[in-house]
Length: 347
Image 1 (cartoon, rainbow, N blue to C red):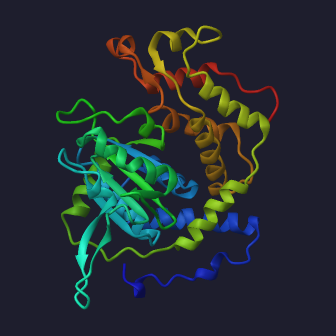
Image 2 (cartoon, helix red, strand yellow; image 1 turned 90 degrees about the horizontal axis):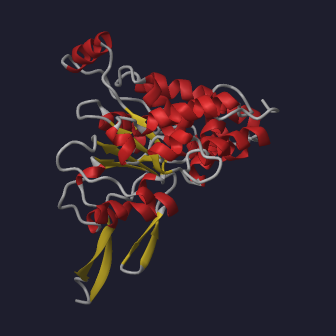
Image 3 (spheres, rainbow, N blue to C red; image 1 turned 135 degrees about the horizontal axis):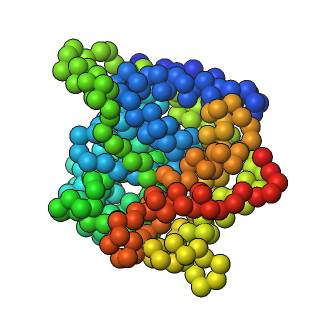
């Protein structure tokens, strides 16, 4: 975006106490969703999960067949948050250096000296859209790992720090489609949410057709600055969480892991690998952000339960028996929500 288009008041969060900042965050959520709604029809749950990911500082994976506006959703969100956006189209011949950048030999005109100069790749942005990430082999997919986890990249032994805030949003077509590669488990675990996009109801699809085949409305206006977004992320970390709520989040995660003792029959029967502790961390962080955007300063059990599906469904890896019986990871998460008891005391 041009600087003239993004002159937001950077002092809007300066000097605010946590309560006032929480109110500003709640107002920002409404403003963001209103502005994004000028371009994206429906998909309320998808937008909510993307926004929570941004407020937490996490990466997310968008799953859905082509044509559901996955790319448009992320690009629109980046515009409304005044963030630098880069899109990388993943293809079978994409190389890691096409993502991170590379060093090239460059000659100085004045001295005729030659030196290696780093040319940054598209990973150097605030919001990076890895479009159709499962169209490229695992070696290239792995080029995102360091950036997603450490917010830096290493090229030819040199480390380059990425500008904050930094997010990776990856779109993915269903694995069953021809020419796709499953993501490695280590990379899947680094995505906070798996956001599932589905076809809209008929009336909303009609709105999409009418809106996109007519005269487009004006440009989107940025409503939140990157400084505000960083302040919101810091606030999320400061929100307290009670021990019973944190213990419930951990109990859900631990219950996904098959083992000899104390494991539910359906887990032993259908699950190959369960979720890591990172899932519990994201349940709690997502719960904190959800509470703040709803005007609360404490995380509830309902916040954790509401986010269990997007946090756990890509981390619960089913075995052959589950696949042969048509049992998916989301059905297993639903069983966990039915069977893992709430702690006796808490919110």
